[in-house]
Image (cartoon, rainbow, N blue to C red; front, side):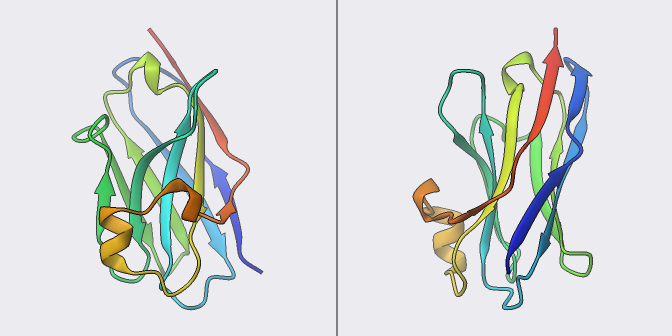
Length: 130
């Protein structure tokens, strides 16, 4: 059974850095698209970054480009979100999620919608103080 468990959230001052992790289990094909999503207080969930687990190609939202980066370690089955120069508006819950198997790498990078992510972790909270 596919499972996602996030960790690594916490409190940090503005300008600081944090890495959140997502341990994934039960993913045997290596053909999923995985992503990190952010939900601020009272706001809708938004895409932060995506990565194709097999091919490694990535997408990063313009709002965090240059500050955040997604990566994965397929030997340890961990998905990472490296966050730098954090701002108070980056506060909120961070979720990792995955699509179905045999998902196109091109689609993962260019146009995967949140609705296509079927499996979600429980989230980890990040608080950035000014």
